[in-house]
Length: 214
Image 1 (cartoon, helix red, strand yellow):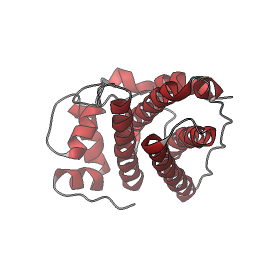
Image 2: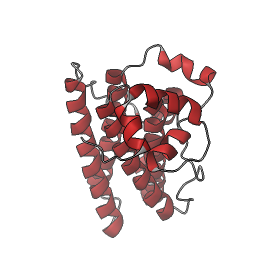
Image 3: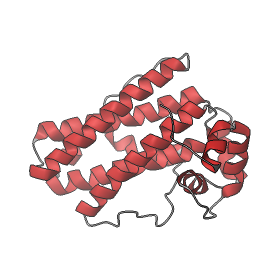
Image 4: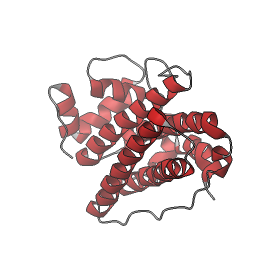
């Protein structure tokens, strides 16, 4: 996937050393440009990111993201099959499921490009959500999409490959759009974290999705 870049964002994507330096120093400072905003949201103190840096590499990050995409894909497929949603909400679920399916295919291909194998798909169980009806399904969908967006943001600082970074950026923005639409439907702020998206650690993401792992 080739990024559309220019100016500072082009330099950051083209030069891994500059990118890492920028991500370390950006913190929560507001700066111009889409990539700059993304990087600023990723910022944090060094002692907050050390635990994940020791074992993180691009293949691990790709498979981490792929596991989340599998879960999202399973969720929407179960929701659609359960026939809980109707009309525009059902159409939205189908469109999002199609997006997640494309994300899965892209990440599976990325894992192989990195000389690895895609992570095994875990069995999921969304029966507790489906039994709660339309409202619970939509609220859970909004939450899952927000977690997905936050997960990509939380890993961005660790990515070395410009191709993987570009893919993560593009998927993150789509997950954020999914979350915004769903948040509006369920009456939540379209951006609960405010002007800057909230990066999530692996521990936070795991805690959020554990209830759905069979």
